[in-house]
Length: 143
Image 1 (cartoon, rainbow, N blue to C red):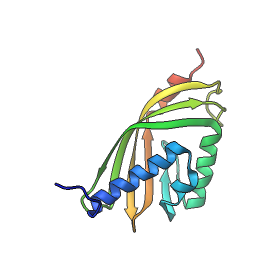
Image 2: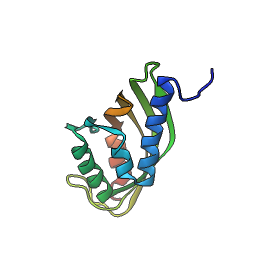
Image 3: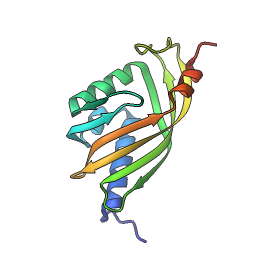
Image 4: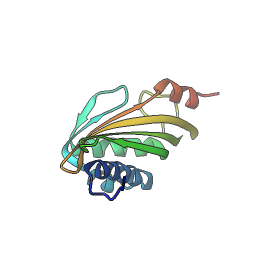
């Protein structure tokens, strides 16, 4: 099989990898440009937020409390290119207390995570993020 970017599956994989590359650069505008206007964002163990503006607000909230890099990213995409999944390791630092969570003091963490994507018109229409919150809480707990 030759991967040349012409198959829908290849384009979906490239879209998700481009999304994560923008994340790792802290390029929020680059990430937002890859989303549909009505993107659905399912937060881990939380509510669904809808729309690019809500997603932008989420990114600002996250960057205020966390510095993260995703490594060991693996992307799988459906043959029709309409869905994709990713698995990765989050290497992060918790630098400012996030509301309702333990106090931040620069704790570092490494956390497996994953996401499911719906793709429409070569844009991300849904991102559903998953990680083990209890594992994260254990890693950032005061010692």
